[in-house]
Image (cartoon, rainbow, N blue to C red; front, side, top):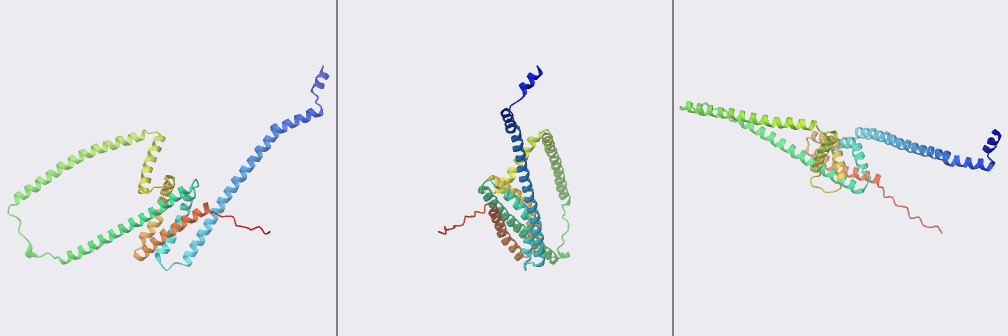
Length: 299
């Protein structure tokens, strides 16, 4: 009986070959394919990480070179030297934000338009504030000079009014009115304070998703104000808004340090020009637009 079963399990050469082919196709080939897929994915990740590391090293090397050049070869104009420092600090953030926009050229065009328009407004605001401060300073100096010139004279002193009691009554009545006003204002402030506490308590009870939605609404409002009525792709506008907030202080701090109008004018004029060139170069890196050379048939 056992011999019969053993003879039944014995396969001939063709059957064994067919079984091996089946196992190879079903299991081994699938395992090899999976291994190959994992290997290719790992190689892609390695290549990507290596390119990032090379980019960081290159950026750091360029930064060191630029700093060395700026220090060894400063420009004759102080405004340009301060501008170099601003652009050097801002370049990595601008490049990252700009080159994340790869879906369409419209996104990058919107980024560029909103970004440059924001800097035009920034320089206008800083110039207006500076001019206002200079005007206030001039008025203060003039007032001080006039005060020095106007010395009091004993001849112009007047005797106190005879009806001093009525004057005191008026002052007392005015004082009492102010007290009543303060009390009313305090009551109103209590009401406002209570409303704020209720609003704060209501926000505490919001879920994280609801908080995120409220935060986005608030940020969208800021982005719309940033756009200042300018059209264009909203994703590019939003990315431009984030980039501008990251680098604004690099430019405003250096610009406001300049007291000379000539230095400020050089900083502003060449700053806008170089920012435009910078964004154009980043666009060229993403979309080089290289054309195949026209090679003629030698025959």
